[in-house]
Image 1 (cartoon, rainbow, N blue to C red):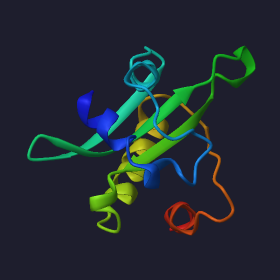
Image 2: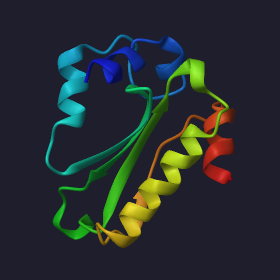
Image 3: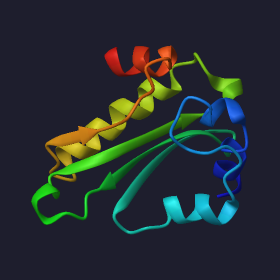
Length: 119
């Protein structure tokens, strides 16, 4: 959990998202500790460099869908970590969680994220 807290301490990670900068460790822990949230992490030498989380909808009619959150450590941007995480999350959604819809929000000026999602 400490690595995820560190990841969100960088304003460059939250600047182009709907998250506020400087999230508390309790807030971050709450995001990743719920039973209906599925988080995959990318690690190198026991250090978390990124995550992707699927947030399963609580709405009865939307149980087939999940929201997506993804973040990569600024020192690891451009190394394919985000793409690998996203592909694994899609595989998990399709083949393990029986989801048919993934949703995400992206700011129109977040060109790096848009490039990732379009690839």
